Length: 448
Image (cartoon, rainbow, N blue to C red; front, side, top):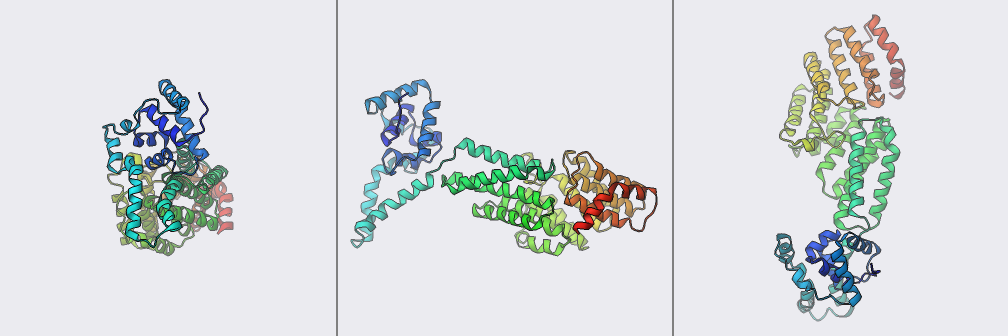
């Protein structure tokens, strides 16, 4: 293999050897067709090291016959008899699209465009100003297309963020903090190096999702101030790229903070602006309506609870299974049933609480570390309201002694609330519950 210090002629030779149009070649390399135009015609001032690595990779993965043609062309210092323009005119639909938007004519048309532009503006635009008018758009496009991250590396970062969003509900959350922060730092550092625009968008989305995971971890550890900062970062990242779904997911996470600070009016104030837009479809919209339903139930607003929980359910209708992923980036039917149980419990409707809790437990993955335990507390509260003291204590004990249960903030707080509800009750079951839960209850009171 000959050593290549890539030039525009080399790029043209490689594309000719591969017999690809500019559109096809750009997709293969992982850049835009515009970048290929700039490379081939020497409009970029230098070939970035990252660009050279991309081209080196294409050569290393090419068919041996293609490599041999390319080497002959480079060695001979010419196109080895291949008709590059013919390669640009293959009749497939993707190549036709490239032709339709004018990519393969840009070089030929450039001088004409420049002359027309200057004629329109007038003779007053001369010298350096004229050069800037003609050159700066292309330089900006070259900058937008420049980047150092590979498609494979970007894909791995995206997959890692999704995996962390799932695992954070399956293991004690603090175990993931270091890993998530390291991933976030990697993505942030990569963003600080100018990337191709389409890669930049995906990196921002990944950074936002990782920030959401950190917010979830900090919330569960009781660090509300820091959690608010990270959820806010996730929201800002989503807004920057116009990703409304991720923004809504982060907003739902942020709503946990006033929810578990027993400030339902703050929840409604936080969500009010978005819910006025009446989001009606998808897991993120369903989650926002579910959080609002919980807040209304805490305030004793039964009518508004029913309205919001029904909207939450309707938002999940006709949602494909691929969107109903486990973890914090979606909202599944079991979570809807859990929120129904919480609401009915707060409204003192024991029968509906028990039914919703049973439905939620039937749906939850037993590996989840917190919400199944919280569902059991709602069931226990319903049993307590019905006068079934022994059974209520038994179910509550299961909530804190389950093999997968993580005794974090949410479980601790709910255990304390259940114990308070037992204040006027006596008996062996109550005593046994308190023996099991003493350390948890004391922890809840310390943090209150």
